[in-house]
Every structure is written in C-alpha cells, then in structure tokens.
Image (cartoon, rainbow, N blue to C red):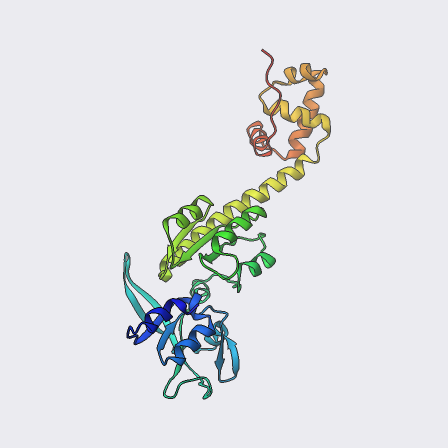
Length: 304
C-alpha cells in the first residue's frame, strides 16, 4: 500500500507531509510507515475506523456523535456553482501512545458533520449502515424511503448496491454522492434509475432537495404498488365467468355482443356485469376500463 509513496521518498524527494484518501488512510501499516519516517500526514478514514479516545477505542462516527453542539464550527470549502460550500466541522484531540507516536507529535480527528445529522436537521427520519451489505439485510420498502450511497464503499460499491437492489426487486430510489465521480459511473448510475448524482462536497441545501425528490418518487411508487395490490385482491373475488365478462366489457363490447360471444343472453350478462362492477368497486365503465389496464386484462380481438 505504501510502495507508491515510498519510491519518491527513497529517491530523495523532500516530503514535508502527506495527504491521502481513505483507501490509504484506513491502512495502519501506511500510517506507521509515515511515522517511522517522521513524515506528517492528513489522511481520510472511513466512519467505521477504530480510533483511541478518552474512554477507550471507538469507531470514528461514534466518537464524533459524542461531540457537543458547540464543538461544531461552520467553515467554507471554497466557492461552488451555487455559492460558498459551507460545512460543519469539529476537531478532537486523540491520546498518543509513547511506544507508537514519535516525540513531539499530536494526533487529531477532524470530522465533517455526517449526512445523517444534516438530514435529521431537515426533519427526516434517518437510519445509517456501515456497509451496503448491512443495508441489504435490513432494507424495507413498506414506507416512503430512499437510499443515499457513496460511489466508493467498503465491500459492495454504490453501483454494486444499485444492481443488487434491482436484482432483488427492491424499488428504492437511490441517490449517489461521490468525490470520485467519472462520466462512465455517472452515466451507468443514471441509466440504472438513480434519482441524482451529487459531487462532493455537497451543500446541505442540494442534499436535502435531492433526498426530498427521491422521497416524492418513493411515495408515488408506493401508492401505485398499494393500488395494484388492492386491484389484484378485488380481481380475486371474481368468478371465472365474471372475469370473462370483465375482459369483454372493458374492451368495449356491448352486453349483447358479450352475450353472443359467451353463448348466453343479454339479461344474464347484465347480471354478471353488475356483479363485476360491485366486486371491483368501480364507479363507472371508464373506471373499470382503467382497472383492466392496470391489471393487464384485455379481451379477445373483435371479430372482423
């Protein structure tokens, strides 16, 4: 893991300090290698990273959650397309062990306020997961919901998660955020049905607006699914003969024509039709036709 940084250092290139993403930051061997060379570093670590605290070792996100509100300071990450990109940051001093920390060194954990806090502050119910695999174990689709996922995650990537949700038939709107977006990944995500693809750092406003769009889509899909379940339950009440009448009436046949095709009288068809209307809870013929369309019911083609 450290070989890429080792080559310039071994070649005598002066290195004052090193910065790296979490792929390197979570590797303790890489950090130890830097410390052995007395090279300072600022590296990203995943929220699940174990870090020492005053009460023992904790996950980075657990330690951050203990920070009092006054510890968070709003700072700019520079100008964005919609103005300054402002985020909340907190910093915590970490204990140093004499046997592993070079003399005169300090350890700090710098934390940007988690998306969960931003979303909860926006009045949303939030459940966070350490990995895509954990989400797939607990996922439920019985209430309006969406998934906010990074493109790069340990284990299953964001695109892997999207594919797996589709394979399982879980109709959850998905919103991607990433600091490593490329055209290929963005196009694949959007073609796979992603609601949006936001590039880090994302502002609170942009994130909340995107999540609310995703929740609106979820509500629409959930309402359509529940309506479908109701229609299927009503359809199950019909007798085989009533289903035949349903299909023919919805296709535009008159009672007399339906009777002729089924070999019975117009009067009998009127009785069956009334029962179909009652059991399907249709208010009108137009309502019945709409239900047939939702259920995929079509009568045989009209005789020429």
